[in-house]
Amino acid sequence: MTKTFTLDGKVIPFEEGETIMEAAAAAGVYIPHLCHHPEFKPHGSCKLCTVNIGGRLGAACTNRAAEGMKVESETEALNADRRALTQMLFVEGNHICPSCEKSGNCQLQAVAYHLGMLTPHFTHFYPARDVDASHPDVLLERNRCILCELCVRASRDVDGKNVFGIGGRGIKARLIVNSASGRLADTDMSVTDRAAEVCPTGAIIRKRHGFTVPIGQRLYDHHDIAEVPVAGMERPKK
Image 1 (spheres, rainbow, N blue to C red):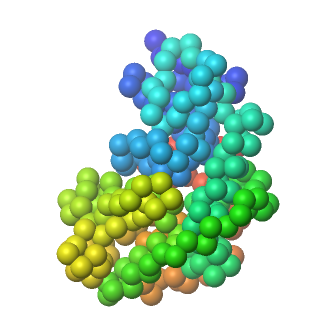
Image 2 (image 1 turned 135 degrees about the vertical axis):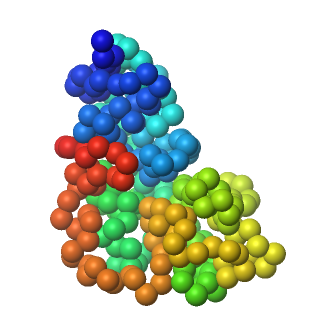
């Protein structure tokens, strides 16, 4: 017999061992997220996928589904918290969407639209962060990094190179490159590495590809992020 739980009143079937996020995605229900990717071990750091699980809050990407569980996601309070977290991500970095070549394909931008974020609300930090353009084929723009660690996990777990890491703590945390010089050019990273493709923002981009698809014709230009499938997940439906 198929096991089920309810998510916002909808019956969601799941396989033993699946997380709430995995089961919801398989059922076509979108739960906002940024640090989660089906290819990698759940991280639970961005907190956007926080849901109410029978009266307690927990990350949908790390909590396993259970028979009879009652989960709430699309509540006014949870979406207000998600919106505030997204606003914090915008002011903590330097996300200038109109000048970013990832605009329209950026998950951070798309999540902000989905949540109805109209302003940053908080005071911008305007941190001074390095841009590493040393690699011939890959640009590292730390101003757009949200520390989701997807590139860290991809480089370590898929590419087997361990090119990236996180250095520092709190507001001083930043994406670092594991080479003696700290430059991307002095690593064995290749433009074909999974780490070069998995960034949800414009922090890691392939050079000379920024406007291959014109602005206005990109992934999220005409579709809410809840309508766009993530590789490895079933197509979400609103």
